[in-house]
Length: 175
Image (tube, rainbow, N blue to C red; front, side, top):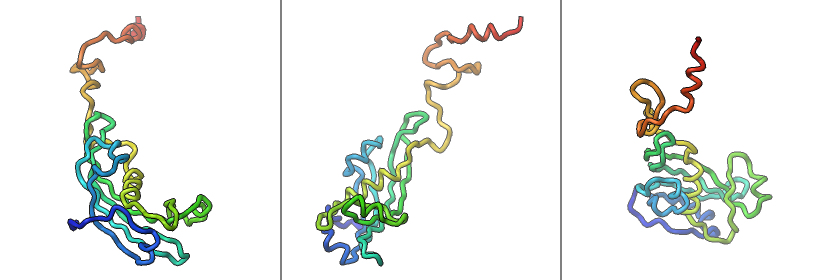
């Protein structure tokens, strides 16, 4: 993306009337809440935001984001890189009643009409929403503490504690 300065905020009264489009990238390190879900703050999020007014006179933000981030693998608890990509269409609303009346293809973004819109807040919310709840490495990764012993038993590799169910194994054998 171009190395241009992205504004921190835009004036909601003007940006929609101008039908402006803002594109660029922002460092992942700038998203405080989103960074809490990650193992590192490396990389950038590339985005495009288009502001306009639709046929029903709603203020609409159409956008897309993509980023590559590191999250924890739920199997081995090691970092795994995940590609995030999302397209969204938001309608600026001032109340819950307006949000309830929106068509299904529009998601609400609550903000007063005469306010500043923080671009980072919009992008951060969309990043959080498109992050998978559970992430795994693409190949099977097995945590070291759950690796099987060479004889096929499920004893831990860190130390061989006696299996508390070994007594049941003896009871299962026929006399």
